[in-house]
Length: 150
Image (cartoon, rainbow, N blue to C red; front, side):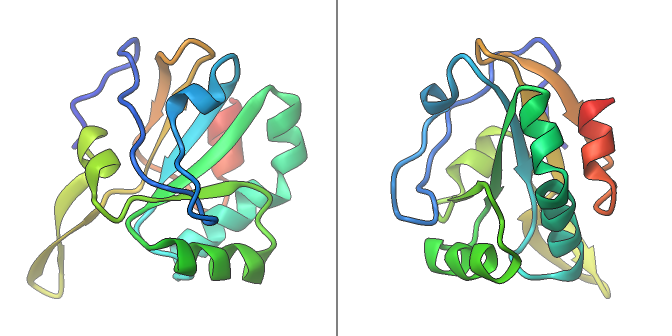
C-alpha cells in the first residue's frame, strides 16, 4: 500500500525506457503525467490495461496527459510488448525496483498460498509541477481511461 497522498511531490523516476534511454520526471515538466504501475508485460490484465490506454490515447493526449507505464520487466520485454500491441507510449524498465519502492507499489502478494513480492497495480496522476493530483488504487484494467479522465 502506497504511503503517498494527493498533494505530495511525486518521487523521482529511476530506470530506462524500452530503448535503454534514462527517464526522469523532469522529462514531463509542464505536462500532466499518467504514471501507471503494472505487474508484468504480456499478461491478461496488464495487456487489457495497456490496450485500453492505447485505444483511448488520442482522448488522453487531448486532455493534456502523457502516459508512462512502469514494471520491473527489462527493456527487451518492454520492446516486445510495445511492438506486439502497438503501444504509442513508453514503458519504464524499473529492473532495480527503485521507482516501485519509492511509489510504495512493491508489495507482498499471495497466490495459491505462496507469498512473493510483486508490483501492486496502481496509477498516479501527476500535475505539470510534479505534484500528485490523483491516485487510482483499484484499477479497472478494461476501462482505465474512464478512471483517469473522470
